[in-house]
Structure formats: C-alpha cells, structure tokens
Image (cartoon, rainbow, N blue to C red; front, top):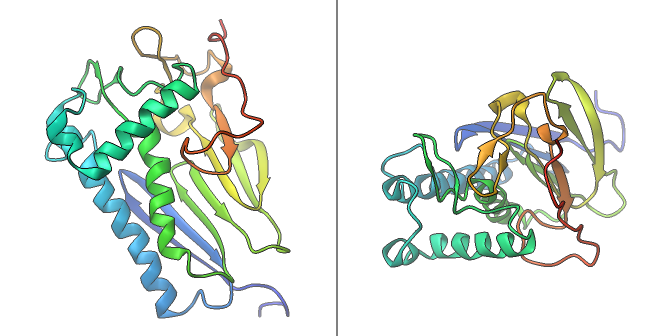
Length: 238
C-alpha cells in the first residue's frame, strides 16, 4: 500500500535507436490511458528520428550517405538541416572537441556521424509530447542521455553514473530537479570515446580517465550558452 502523500510512479522501457529508452513519471495520472498514449508518442518520435539518422540502417538518410557530409539533397529535410546546424554550433562551442565531420563509422573508416548529438536532441524533441502534464515529474533516459523535469517543491531526481570498470558500482550520483545529464561510458559499448584530432580514434578502455565523461546543463543540445560554461580541455590525458 502506498504511503499517504507519496506520488504514484510508472516506468516504460522500449528498445529504440538500438538502445533501451526509459520514461519514468511521478504524478497523479500515471496509470491513465491518456498518459500512456502520450508516452507512446515519445517512442514513436524516437523511431522516426532513428529512421532518418541511424548510421546502422542502410535505408536511412545517414546510411545512404555512408559518412559523406550531407549535401543539398539531404539538408532539404528540415530535421537533417537542424542537426547539421547544431553540430556546427557544438563544434564551435567546444573548440573542436565535438566534431561530427570525422568520426569512426560502423562499417569502417571515418566520416560524418552526428550520433553524439542526435540522441540528446531527439530526447528533447520527444519530451515535448509530455509537456502538457504539469503535475508530473519526468525522467527520460535514452542510453545515458537523460532529460529531467520536476514540479517545484518535489524531490530532485538522482542519476547514478556507472563505473566503466565495474558497472555494478557508481562513480557518482547527480541530483538534478530540472535539466539534462549525459554520460558516455565504455562499460556498455566498449572503446568508442573518440579523440577528434586530427583523425578520430577510440581511447583504449581502462587506460584513461576519459572512460566515462559526463556533463550536465539546462538542455541536451547546444542551443544556449550558459554563463558558467566550462572551458574545453586543451588535450587528452596521457
């Protein structure tokens, strides 16, 4: 029996974009069909994004490009155009530490791969389907890209950061009431964290403190500059 005053909770988990995506809600209507229908819209939008941007699907827009930079035909799609623009913004904001133009591709070689930005961008877009639930707290997690929203006065969400050397352990716990947290670790995907200079190369797992870089901010995408934005590092640790 739920204690008096405790919010009802409900979670949905679906495999989308090649990874588990979870929606966690706290609030008075989480058991209703209306809320469940909105959550399904979230997953439907993520599937639509995957159909455009997956680098693993030969029939997607990115799959057809095969790593080539999107030209006029591809950027005629407003979603592709928006992502290309955001990638350039992220490259400029990070002084080149994020550069979608030369990353390792699934089938070998290097080329254009915006996946490091698309996931967070897609999470933000999909979360709009839950924006009309003002009395509900939201945690939307797409493989480590997490968007959070909490009604003022309620407890913040607690986000655990796995230790890549032992996923059963946590390196840290981030408490956040509203905003975004992203972690890219080697525990689930192996060595995929890439040095963008001059040709991307994964860092060997277990040899670098960059094995689980994490960040947090007001959004999942580089749309606004934070007054306290950190200065990018000048180099990889040895």
